[in-house]
Image (cartoon, one colour):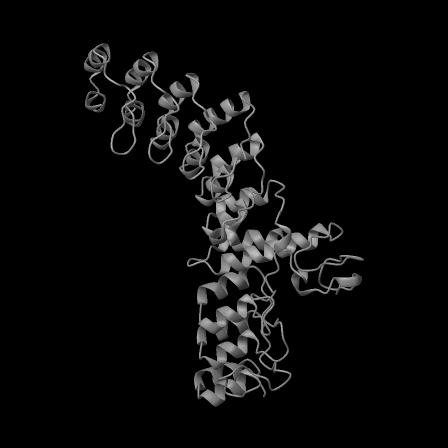
Length: 391
């Protein structure tokens, strides 16, 4: 094995002729074939194959030499092993195939080689790993746009499969994986390739986008109609208009994008252009769901406010009558720059809360001007007054 590590082919031949065990393993469960494949020693691999080396022997991580060659990014070694009959569908202890690893690192030429071999052998390219992820999901999650395009072109399911792993429950499709990790190019690619927003039945909302679609009732003035349908928690009714369902999925993805440590304006823009509702409450199901603009104003996030206003967020939209609009929230918290931005974007300086059920800890004011006055924010009072605030 030491002779293999140093690449001395003459010594390896001599040792084999003298009865050396070529399938001997080291402390990591690696055979000489694993080591030669990792180091890209083509002549040694070919010699070991000729002498009967086992091409499918696995190390302690369950990886065959083909896994090792792919992880090393060695195209020639990958080809040698495939031509020698290595199983392209081999899985390791994590149920990952060589294609999964090639997708992780965006190794396009290796991906093409593996895809061609899988096509020849009629092997499913949507095989899932131990967490229920396909190669497409992993390529998308890691931001490898060309790899994603290759997989889609070859017929990979555009959903990127649904994961059953609880940790990854929020990002169960390739599109979600790309959104979560902030890969704008991949998001745009998936949105532009007739992406099907497939989710398990357990994640279908009882009320899509807050609309009551039971017994055919729905507010058709602002939302897509779903006639004569009945949707219960955990039940996917195929009569529900796909546009309504897709809009819910896209809006959920928008929520994820807006919660990212670094918000991507391009991802937000593309999701809204595809149909996500920028004005829908961020936390559906709660008694006081906030819009993204309200949330951004509340935490004083100028950049998020800029992104939201740029894609058309309504400055005067709120989900519940007793919760303040974004302008009132900003005025209450002395967010001067945000107050100015909201007013410039058309926020109503005279909007009031329709009842007195304000959130705990609020000053008790029912308008932006009252909030600023009660908190002693004279700078905000001046800005609002100049904008026409009267109450």
